[in-house]
Image (tube, helix red, strand yellow):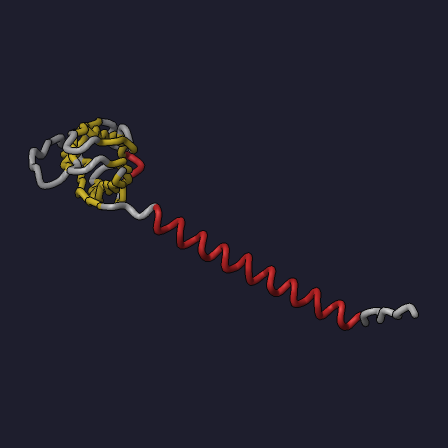
Length: 150
C-alpha cells in the first residue's frame, strides 16, 4: 500500500522560511560583530606619543630653539620653516605619524610612515609654509606618533 504524503500548508512553509531567515540574520550579525572587534583589537598601537608643535605668522620673523616641543618659530606671510624630530624606539616597530590641532593644512611631514629597528633613530622632517595673506595667526597642536611593534 502506498503511503500518502501530506503536502505542507503555506503557513508551515512560511514559518520554516522565517526561522531560517532569522537564524541567517543572527549568524551574519554575530560574525560582523566579531570581525569588527577583532579588527580594532589587532590595530591598537603598542605605544602612542604626542609631541606638541607651534608656529606663528606675524610681520616680524623669529625662531625658537626650545626642545620641549616642535617650535617652528614666527614666520612672515608666505615664508617657510623646517624642523627635525629624532624618533627612537626600544623595540622594532612600524611608526605612523598624524597631526592633530590647528593649522595642519600648512604643515607637511616627510615620511608619515616608517619602520624602525630596535634602538634605531629616524629623522622625521617637519615643514611649515605660512599662508601668504594671513597675519597674526597662532597655530598649535600635536604630532601623534603611533608605534606598532613588529
